[in-house]
Length: 408
Length: 117
Image (cartoon, rainbow over all chains, first blue to last red):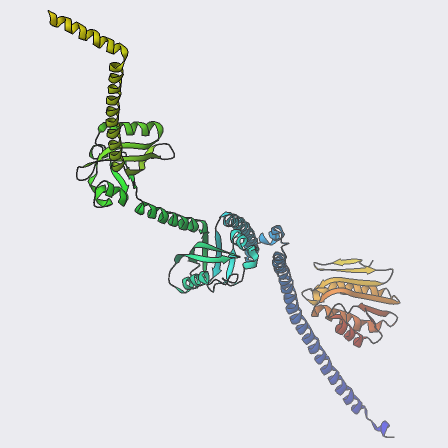
């Protein structure tokens, strides 16, 4: 019966011990409650702080997202500047960003419109120019050509972009000109170049110019084929004329209104007795007095020239260099400008001295013949009269009368 | 008369006596335990009316700070003394904090019925 042996004091001791334990537990409990409170309040503070900062940032990010969304819409071309007005009203950096964004989009749009208008105008000008215009990069690849150039080859302007110059024609003269120009130091250069287009050979005056700090060149080609052909035809015509002029047997001349020769051919100089055309041009300064023997001839000549515009087969006597006189015959006309004013005279001269001499001889012979004929005619008349019966009767009467006279 | 509604800057607490449901809506970010006193009082008043079930609907609570979860935990502990009242707590997976923290509430009161939607 040991349980009955548990004494009162032991129980009291246990109770005390339990009480003390209880107190300790309570104290610990209070500490724990305090700890819980402390930690709860501390974390609550932090949580609330973080939460409210989060909300501020969320709002800020929302507005930033509006701007980034606007950027996406700019790429899609659906951006409305007014959609950023609210953010643009902020007085912080975000407001500035929104306003700058709006301004930049506006500026870009305006510039794009201006650029498009300028490009359109430029294209109109380029396509209106009746010359072959092309622009190339420094490697000799076409960046673009105008309509005229493309039409020359029967292609579209777009076809040329990116192709190397010379891709259409085997002819390398244009290619070598462009290549030399690209490799050279000159800022600009020009050359007349032959180009085969289809079956025909054309001549172009090509002018090339560097631009963009030498990164590109522009080239303008003017078709001078017609001019070249005309020049060639003119050259041949001039050669033909020169041949005739130099070698003609007749004298050919041009003279000015104030009385000196502008040009004379070798035959002319020879007819007038000069050693050379140059000497004649030099010596003769007043045709009216130096050349024409009779002033009246010159006046008559000028009158007819004025009235009829030309004089044909005009015969006159002229002085040669040595002062001797010969007969010439000239065909002369006045050369006029488009207004009708006389610029100079030009004509052909023939030395007709020999013919004139023969004419004189013939005249003289005829005259002599006439006298002879008259003489014979008179003798014949006299014979007729003296042979007639009437004349014989008269003679007999005159005779008988004579006898009568002698009786006295 | 139990209050039907407690309104704060970012939250509303509503009591529906028909369904014995206290619905919490918004951000519960009060500064200290003392500031949660009115809500605590409301919950205690509902329990005091000895309902068979009492529902706490926290689906729409997007933020609950430490002082708040502390208040709820103490309330759940106190409910041990009211064996006649079945406590139902309704939360949602959509709110990140609710799955873990509401499960912990059940540790204080095993009889607590937890519904996570």
